[in-house]
Amino acid sequence: MKPGIHPPYEPVVFRDKAGGFAFLTRSTLTSDKSVEWEDGRTYPVVDVEISSASHPFYTGTARVLDTAGRVERFEKRYGRPDAPGAAR
Image 1 (cartoon, helix red, strand yellow):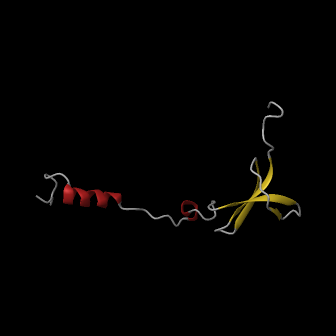
Image 2: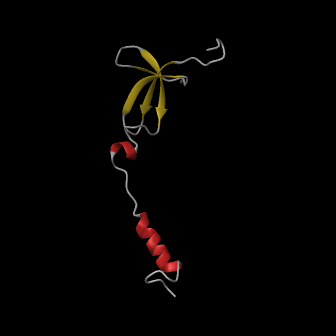
Image 3: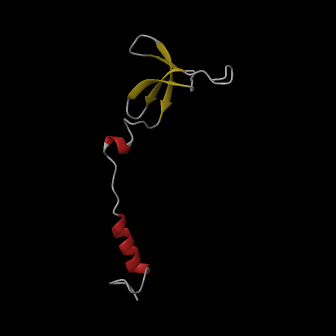
């Protein structure tokens, strides 16, 4: 890497406010706030709205929508006249 053109890449704590979950990683982000981590050292902390601890896809609380039923209802109401049960 060319020296002097890249931002510092240092340890940062990302904290999920909704899930109460935090993890330590390296990033170019920084913050004025800091937190004492499990190892006793102080790191900058970045608060995030959603992480893998609170996102519905990762927690298994995602809802599956019935898109096939919606399409059939739409076609029945407004769609093709040759569709079974279509309004004429």
